[in-house]
Amino acid sequence: MIILSAGAWSKYLINVKLPVKTYYCWASLFLSKKKEVGSNIIYDYVNNFYSRPVIGLGFPLAIMGDGKAIETTPLQQNICIEDKNEVSARISRRLGEVKELYTSGSFCEATPDMRPAYGKIAENVYFIGGFNGYGAEVGPGLAHVLVEEILSKKEDTYFTEYRLERLNGYDGNFEIGQEPHEL
Ligand SMILES: Cc1cc2nc3c(=O)[nH]c(=O)nc-3n(C[C@H](O)[C@H](O)[C@H](O)COP(=O)(O)OP(=O)(O)OC[C@H]3O[C@@H](n4cnc5c(N)ncnc54)[C@H](O)[C@@H]3O)c2cc1C
Image (cartoon, rainbow, N blue to C red; front, side, top):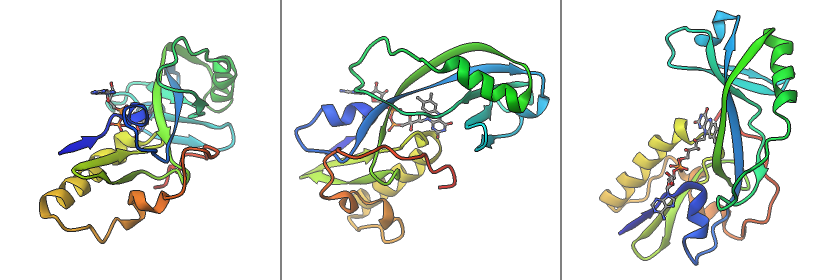
């Protein structure tokens, strides 16, 4: 049995068409003068950025970014982050002076409805992915659902909205939407 869970790479590892698009996303580690950033998650829909505390011990350190999807394949190297200064300026509009300490990014994959997907794609082959930039939060939960289904040999009836079949007919040709933070 194979569970294909290689994130943005999954799409490029098999000959089955997956209804996902891949993109690059970056974030920066910031030092702020506001100690609140060290213990609060912020979604700023006016200045368009998000912030997450680092470690959660209350230090005024946070990972921040705009969550913007730069459409590309995970085979792409040296991706240019063009709007970093502009994002910093927007963050400062809300939080005052911030100091960028480190910036990095990686590849994610999106689905047409910006919700994750799991299901069977061939005999003894399952897929889980499409985490649209929030897989650290919901990935383990959905993995649990998939494993339960496989072990019990019974289809889950509660999380049906995340079943891969809902995306039948999509081949990866769609516009990447907005990350649903309230999922
Ligand atoms: C800058 C940034 C900020 C983010 N912020 C958040 C956040 O605040 N909250 C949140 O919930 N999520 C966040 N995410 C998204 C989260 O990281 C992803 O949704 C999550 O990592 C997806 O998990 P995954 O296991 O599906 O894929 P990945 O974590 O990408 O794991 C896939 C793994 O498969 C490996 N792989 C690839 N090909 C093969 C192969 N052939 N054989 C074996 N292994 C292979 C890859 O190397 C990789 O390690 C962020 C992502 C980025 C880039």
